[in-house]
Length: 305
Ligand code: G1P
Image 1 (cartoon, rainbow, N blue to C red):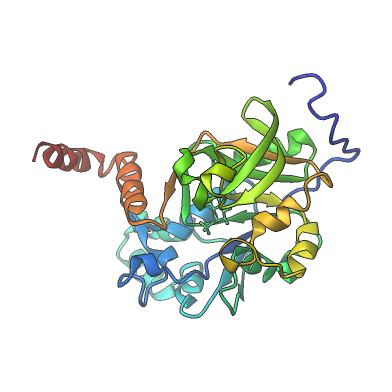
Image 2: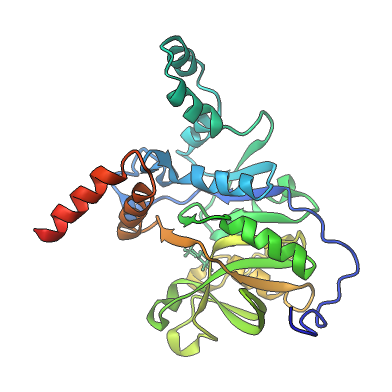
C-alpha cells in the first residue's frame, strides 16, 4: 500500500459488517418484449439459472445474510423462485433425481433471509433503493443490479468487501473502463489516488456526454453504501433522464466518508441488453463442463458459415 493513501479518510473504528443487500428488480424489461410480457426480465435464464439468482449467489459468497428485493407489479414469481416448491421437491426426491433436487435447494436462502418491498412508481434507481430504507435500517448495505451479471472468482461483491475492510469502510462501487462513446450510459467516476485496483472517488456524474465525462471509469451495478444515503435520497431530487439517481445521492456523500471504486477482475455481461444477454449465455455455457463441448462445436460451425 502506498504511503499516505488513507490520510484523507481517517477512520478510527473498524467498519461495520455489511449484512444486507438490496436487489432492485422492479424494471419493466421493455428491451426484451415480448419475452418479458408475463415473465420478469430477472427470471430470464442464463444457461439454466435465472439472472437474479446469480446476483443472490454472488451476494451470499460475499457474506450477505439478508436479501431485500425491490419489486413491482408482475414480479411475484421472483418471490416463488426463492421459496420451497414442495410438490416438485417431493417428486424429484421420489424419483431419486438428486442432482436436480440439489440444484433447487442450493439456490434457496434460509427462512427469513428474504424480504420484498415494492417500488410502486418507476421514478429511477435512487427511488428503488430508497424504497428499501425501512428494511435496511441504520446499517451499511450492498446494492446489486441483477442485470449486470458478474462472473469471476472471487465474486465482484467479495472483492469489494475486501476493499471495504481494507480502506476503513464508507462507500465502495464496482467500476470498469469503458470506451468514451459509451460513458453516457453509466455513472462516471472522477478518480483520485489509486492503490492497485482500488481507486479513490473524488466525484461522480450520472450519464454524462463524452465531452463532459471526468474519466472513462464507469460504475457497474454493485455498490456498498452507508445509511446516510437515504437522507440524500429523501430529497427526491431528479437528475439524468428526469429520474432520482443513486449516483447523485452518492456524489453528495463524497468527503463525508471514505469513497472508493474497485476495478473488478470479474467479467461483466449486461443482461439488460439483447446482445449482452446472449454473450452471457455463451460465456457461462462455455464454463460448464456438461454443455461446453456441444456449445463449442455449435459456435465453430456458426463461425464457418
Ligand atoms: C445504472 C446506474 C449507473 C450505472 C449503471 C450500471 O444505470 O444509474 O450509474 O453505471 O446502472 O449498470 P441504468 O443501467 O439503470 O441506466
